[in-house]
Image (cartoon, rainbow, N blue to C red):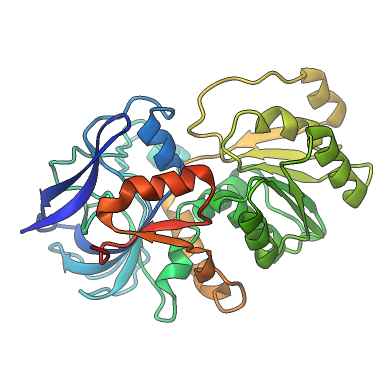
Length: 360
């Protein structure tokens, strides 16, 4: 039995392969991909900006799928919910060892033995494919019966990333003022969480009108265009919030110049949370004196824990009827069209692109 998969053979070289479909191992599962989310990190991986990868790899670390077959000994998901073939699930795409200091003592992800990709010719959990093979100890969770797959897929790994960021760097408190740099999936997730938490102001900076419109639908109270010079962007934010500045700034742009601007925008006694600068390797100058004078706390987070995927799935299912999450899926592509999906993600033309294996 074979299925199709998008394989990154080397930097900037994508191919569609026919790959063997393997029965699940004991404790694992075989999942038919329903939607594979296209993430901005996939763009950085393809271009090499995220560093050297263990080529060839199947792309895709966001997935909603339908259980095709369960491995021996599996009768529930990783939250103890009974599962059977035909059920819809999401999975946490990092294979952890569960036998190291990070896993067992710090209870933090990733660990020093984490595996993000498997050779494309081997059983594989990449979601740009007809099937995802989930090994034993790769957590997956059954979608609630009423959950819409598009609503869960719309924010992909971005919503878990934002929840991870607030776990590590402190939550949004009722009445806080929040600025979000970037209105891609991470930025939109930050808007959603901040608005649902009761933030007084949620101001979003981006250059794509469609993304800014989406931010407003998710709860943003104001938007600022990247077409404005940096000093005018800051002035617009402070005119709305007040001279003390924002309580929280969230970097979700994935672009290096966002970092010094975020430090500059940050208010007195505020927090600056770095979530988008995973793939953009490089440095940017800032003034350390600004950190001291503002009493500024800077923190970062990446690689959500399994619990964050569970929380994100439940969160999306809870708000899907009040917030137009499913509408964020703006572009659908077949497995053979992955290059186009990555292009619209890179340019910002897509609010959210997904791989839909039913498209031939």
